[in-house]
Image (tube, rainbow, N blue to C red; front, side, top):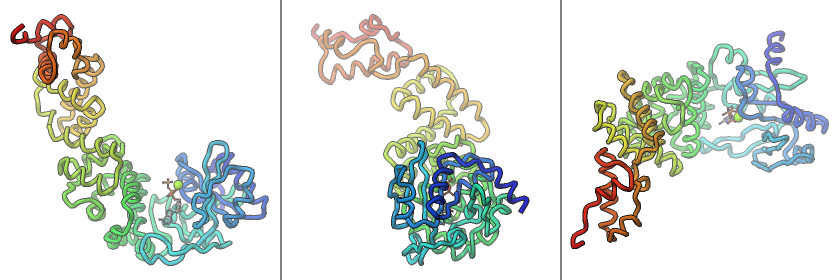
Amino acid sequence: MKEQRSLSSQIRIPDQAQSIITLLESAGFFAYAVGGCVRDSLLGREPLDWDVATSARPEQTMRALAGLRVIETGLRHGTVTALAGGLAVEVTSFRLDGGYSDHRRPDAVIFTDDLCADLSRRDFTVNAMAWHPARGLCDPFGGAEDLQARRLRCVGDPARRLEEDALRILRAMRFASVLGFTIEARTAEAVLQYRERLRHVAAERIREELLKLSCGENVRRVLEDYRAVILTVLPPLVSLEPAVVEAIAPDPALRLAALCHAAGEDVAREVTARLRCSRAFTERVALAVRLCSLRLNEIPPGQKRTVRLRRLLGEYGEAALLDGLALTRAAAGTGREACDALQAEVRAIAGQGLCVTRKQLAVNGNDLAALGLKGPALGHTLDRLLEEVLEGRVENTKEALLAATPPLKGL
Ligand code: ATP
Ligand code: MG
């Protein structure tokens, strides 16, 4: 009990979330902070968001919070979002989930007055704790002990819990990766055993968990230990090189690119299509994989390489080229210094504003039109002048470029 009190004192609830609890309790209901915010606070991490669970039914919550802006986020599931002082707090009525006939969504939810019953439907013990500013921690499943042991364990029978909602399989891996926890043996066994059930889960939900998992500190070990699960949600050609994924910055697009780089751009595009990624995200991933496959790190430094980098900079832009080089570096294993030098060179070229595209030439279409050029010939001439500049044979000044423009026949 003493330990629980000292644990609870680590929790700093934002005023807005506190005021929501106070409003609900002055209306005669119970209300607690629950789930991820309690877990993260006890770990000394800043919670991303605050969730409140209450004995009030959704209509009663709406009435009790009438003074705030309240959005009916998921009334059927008992959730409303209260906006207080710039913070969005999800307020969910204590509930039980009915059966899961489709392994993903509960068929019905049943409201209850019992906090423990609500906690029992939650996925992992570390996510099944509630905290109250005066009453302290409510931890019926040993979540605090598991936090201390850095262990992820299902509430109840792991096989049943992962079978009824297969998304929990990826959530287990995500928390193991992000928090650096070990998945307890029976839960780990169920993660592997029920992986095929992930085929019933919506692509968007898989994407969300997979990208968070990819950005975790402990991603390498999770990919090594649960390779079979990843291969259930991604095309089998994906090569999965955990060391390469770990070696790149924890940015979702870069980590996904690292996950599928060795299989090439087509497979990378298949992955993003399967995960229903946005167009911009897909392009970022695919171009990083394409540029990595050019093995720019194998070109020795010198004029030839500089020209190549200028050309690529013109074609893809600085951000994409740097992504590609970051991936090249992660995939290079040893020999990363060569990649560092490449990145530095690209930044220098971009920083100096050197001419790498037609638009940056000191002459434009009008200048050439004044010489009598038109149509395709004008475009070709601009391309050739850009080549001359990229190769360093002609300076990017109007004078030099006009002097280098081939004379027109018949003039
Ligand atoms: P974070 O917000 O940091 O990603 P979280 O634990 O808060 O992590 P949410 O998806 O916000 O995750 O869910 C809030 C809480 O709802 C969880 O802590 C857990 O108690 C419960 N929960 C979420 N998804 C499930 C699920 N699929 N099955 C059972 N309980 C779940
Ligand atoms: Mg959350």
